[in-house]
Length: 179
Image 1 (tube, rainbow, N blue to C red):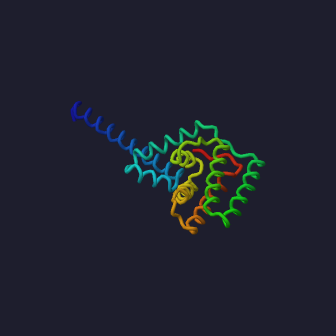
Image 2 (cartoon, one colour):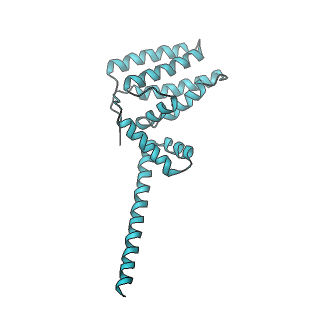
């Protein structure tokens, strides 16, 4: 084999090795994000129509939230919000629509107290998905029902269940887990 052939072979090997490394890194990134975000990963990939841009968006969410000052609630705050939640749930029997509105407001207040910015709904849901990926689906479902002016009482009951799931996760007093 002559020198030119040897150089070409080395270049080809280096290109193949670089390509394998790149694809392995991309796969690992996807696995890490899928593990971190759970069902939110699939929802984001579907929304973007492609894994690459979706994964970049999820990484951007993570970086955004790292820059926020998200804090756990104190025991006193958690207890106070727990009592407010019990009042909201009790109100559901007599005024389902009002209780759903109050549940949404209370979840928003807890988020704000914890340090989440209170921009538009999609931004709030994206921010919450970083530290609470298991419940962001509940938040989205509850919000969809709450904004449906024709929601039946059973739908409103389901929204209350969704809000309760989110609320219970938000008032935990442990530090959020970040990767």
